[in-house]
View 1 (cartoon, one colour):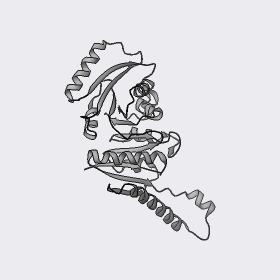
View 2 (cartoon, helix red, strand yellow):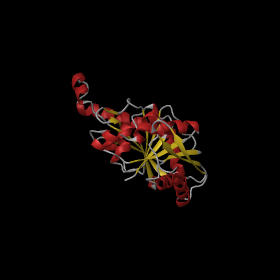
View 3 (tube, one colour):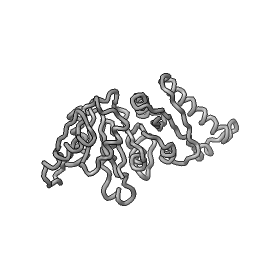
View 4 (cartoon, one colour):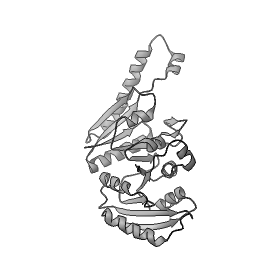
Length: 271
C-alpha cells in the first residue's frame, strides 16, 4: 500500500491538503499520515517561565495540544484510516517531512507565510527541491474536488514523470493536455515536437490526449495562463531538484509555478 503524507501546522491551506489526500487515498489505495512538528520555543519559555509550569510540563502541554488537534482532524474523516504523527526529534521541518519516506506528499502552501524557512524560501519549494517522491501543493484559495482535466508541462527531454504520474493517478477517465511553452527561445522545427508528442502518447498509452505549443513571454507565466485558459484541475510538472549555485543561476520553473499558481501543482523529480 502506498503512503500519502500530509504535513500540517493546522492552517487553512493544510486543511485543503488533507481533504485532497483523503480523496486520493481511495483512488490509489494509499494510507494517510498526518504529521505535525513539535517546536519548543526555548527563548519564549525562558522569558515567560512561571512557578506553575516547568519546561517538561510545558512540553507535555504542547504535545497534548498537538495530539488533540490531530485527533480533531482524524474525526473529520472517520471512513479513512489516518495515522497521526508528532515529530519531536527534529530541529527543522524539511528533514522531519522527508524522514517519513512517503510515496506522495500533499501539502498546503501560504507562500511567504506559515511555516517559513527564512534562508531557503518557502517550505513547499524546499520540499519540491529535496523530496524523491512526487509533491502535490495546494494554496488555501485553491480547490481540487475533481480530477477531470490534467495538464502535463513538457519539453519532451524528460518523460519519466509521466509514468510516475500514471502510478499515482488513473488517467483513463481524465482529459490529458500536454503543453510546450515557447518563450521565443525554441528555434527547431515545430513538426518534430508534434511527432514527439505522438510518440509519447503511444509509448505511455495515453487516452484523451491533446498537445499544443503555447506562446508566452516566459515559461512560468505561460503555464499558469494556459492552465487558467483550459480550466485545468491539476498541473503536472517535472523538476530537476536543483540545489546550491545551480538553482541560484537557473531557478526552478516548477517552484515558480507553485509559488504563483492558484491551480494545484504536482511536481515529480526527474534525475
